[in-house]
Amino acid sequence: MRLIVAGAGGRMGRTLLRALHETEGATVVGALEAPDSELLGEDSGVLAGLAPNGIPLSADLWTLSKDADGILDFTVPAATIANVAIAAERGLVHVIGTTGLSASDNAVIKSVTSRAIVVQSGNMSLGVNLLAALVKQVAKSLDDDFDIEILEMHHRAKIDAPSGTAYLLGQAAAEGRGIALEGKSVRSRDGYTGARNRGDIGFATLRGGTVTGEHSVIFSGPYERIELTHRAEDRMIFARGAIKAACWARGRKPGHYSMADVLGIGG
Image (cartoon, rainbow, N blue to C red; front, side, top):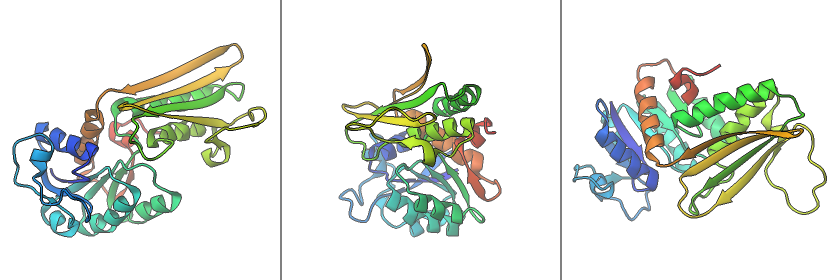
């Protein structure tokens, strides 16, 4: 499968390039970067720590997509939204791992899925998506006597909070409880907050060092506590998941898919 890596000069972009180099049946045919990037024109293979591949970083997705089958997009919301229309027009499989997207951003993404194939997830790893399935089941099994708190930590350079993975886990918990996350989400606590409201789903965010990603969902009940945790040790798990998603999506009907669909653990 011929794939474009968006944000090819960033941490995740370089990891995707390395993962594609190691994956049979998939290859990089384009490396996309922001129009103001100082890396434009640089060889994407060299930037990823590989041998030169003759594919320079470019800001022109329309030209890059001429001979591509899909795009792996772990960038920032504005870049992802700019890529959506071109990917749909070109008929590319669009794998979106970008986090920090707003409700209006997600509406734009979903607006093209009547004619385009989009796989979107706050986290592309197998482990995290299995964790989300477990969280949903536990939340469904336990009533409001068990408070739900989601704790996440990432490296100091992460720019959005809570993480897309934390939000994914919060959605899973809310679905298990049969409630809307937006009405029960508590994103911060400061000062004299009063007692915790029954049924709320709390989020706590830590940032520091070089942590790839750690997430815990805590079910705290009377005199007992259940904790479900995932620790990411290398970004390669996200890259491999994204490539798996792209290959799975090729030839599918237009629509909006998740990693749960890719892994066959939806429902």
